[in-house]
Amino acid sequence: MADPHEPSDAAARRAKPAVVVYPNNTLPHADMEMLERARRTLTKIADIIVPPRDARAFEVPAGCFFRIVSVDGPQVGDLNLWNAHDLSEHFFSGKTRALNATHVGKGDRLWSTLPNLRPMATITHDTLGWYGFDADGGGIHDVIGTRCDPYTNRLLAGGDYHHCCHSNLTRALASARGMDPRDAEMHVHDVLNVFMCTGFTHDTHQYFMKASPVRPGDFIEFFAEIDLLGALSTCPGGDCGSTHSSDTAKCYPLKVEVLRPDANALAGWAPPQRNPYPRTHGL
Image (cartoon, rainbow, N blue to C red):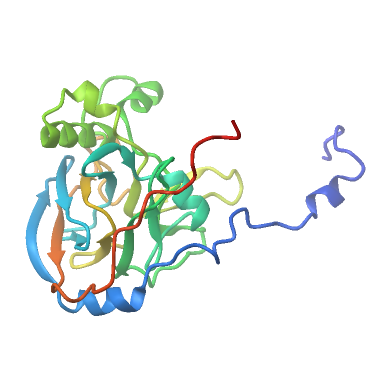
C-alpha cells in the first residue's frame, strides 16, 4: 500500500543521480611501485601473538611494514592505530571510509584524525583481495562497524562482559603505556575490522556480519607512514559467523609481524606532514 503522505513527485525526487561525496582522484596516493620493491627486501624484527579474546599492543617505526596473520583458524581482529608519540592523533575510520569505501584493500590508506588528517598506514598486500563483494553485499576489512563493547552488550543483553574488543584494546593500551584503564579507554577508537566479512542487508539496511573467509596463512600487510603504536584485539566472535561479545564462539589467536626493509629500499621517501590547514576557521 502506498504511503498516503508520499508527495506526488516522490519518484522524481528518488531518481536524482548519486554523486560521490569525496572524489578521490586528487588524493595523494602512495608510491605502490616503490613499496612493492621494498617489500621484497623485508626482514622480520618482531612477532607478537594475540591470544583469543584478548589484545596486544605493538610498535612499528615509520618506514617499516607490519602484517596481521591468521595462524590457527578463522578469526577476525579489531585494529587501533595511534601516533606513537601523540595518542591524540589516531586512526579516523569515518574519514577513511569517506575517502575510500566501506571496505579497504591494497593501495588504500588509513587516515588520521583532525586536525592532522594524514596517512598513518598504507595497505600493501591482502591475501583476501580476491573476495570482492558477495551476493549479500558482504566485503572484507570494513570501516563501517565500531567495535564490540561492554556498554552496548549491557544495553542489549544485560550483564557485564569484559572481553569485548573495546575492553581488550583498553587493557592493551593501558599495559603498553602504563595508564589507568579508565584513562586509556578514552583513547580507544573506532576500528579497522580486519578479516571481518560485513555489509548492510538489502531489505532493512542493517549492519550484518557473516563467517569470515580467512584461513591460516592469510594476512593483510601495511606500510607505516609514521611511527605507530598499534593494538589488535582478537574478537570474541571468532570468525563472526554466528555471534560476538560472548564465550560461545570458537576463537583463535592472531599474529602481528613487524618487518623492516633494506636501508636503501625507500630512497627519497619521507613521512607525510600533518595537514597544513591553519585552523583559523574563518576568524
